[in-house]
Length: 405
Ligand code: PMP
Image 1: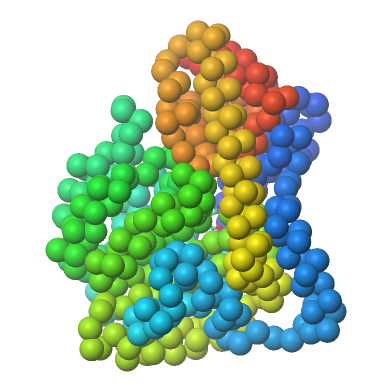
Image 2: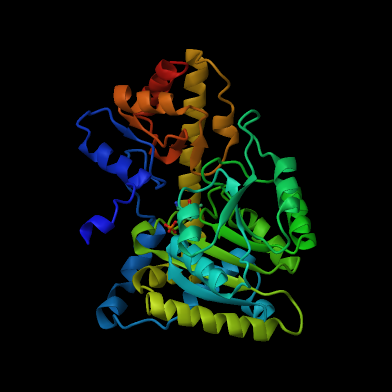
């Protein structure tokens, strides 16, 4: 029997993480995992989250009961408000929010739902080219077939907007289009607001279903409202959608698996009944998969999002993270330019969010790892949050050395 089960390929991210841990070199630098580090290279518990943990402590000692199947409602409501920017009463009939196992669990639950309830032949799922490494496995695991739409131009290192619109227009009517709401992973390149408006128009005229993945709200511009512009615009345009929302990065709750799946129906007299039917099926799927979602992260997030002072202070924490990342981008680019490293490095500062899509090729990335002990994804994606004032020059020297080799 054993021989019937082949080995699964090792996970790229976690494989590199193990290799990094085993690396004995003192200068080693981890630019793989998309998690914020402070300027000492250490994980950072957001001060507002630390305060919420203190506040929750006594309650936690009193009560470790199960949450409802749809999760902690005070958290879900605040999460929806953060994304959609309107009061619960304004959207009551059109949306339903569901607590999930972070962003990955939200994408998964939405994908399983679509796979189960959309008519055969099932619509294709269109993902940006490139996209987060886990999108393809999550959607295919749910029984859906994926294709890519053009997104990033390796020549211009900008959004290939015409190509994107063309592919969305060419996709069969009613396709599922996965869109990253802000701070695109891995490219750090987002559509502008007017481009989002054109994307929404194309989605409407093609009758596509929008599946937003929002894992970095607050990381693109540092402004929560601006970073959810696309989602709010689609909502106002009456486009039916799922939104997978993660609090891993913006609250630093990585290991607590804190997220939501929001379903938004088309407006109209049927909206309320559609929402109720979808919600009932999501409940049933959730019950069979995880029974009820985890308590701790949702309680902490709810405290931060619902408390006036904490939610205001949280903006300061977001600024701390995004400003440090921006500073590292500027230092890396400045140092590469100073060294005269062949190529143009302006994209390091024009790209946004946690990642830089460096343009380094696979063999350059390999040499960075083997010769310099600097780890990044083979695609050339660098987690800028892994840079700090101690290692940024070292990384620039390493890049300078491997370029063109
Ligand atoms: N979507 C994207 C685009 C991501 O980059 C990530 C995190 N790497 C996720 C979803 C999911 O993250 P999590 O499950 O930690 O919320």
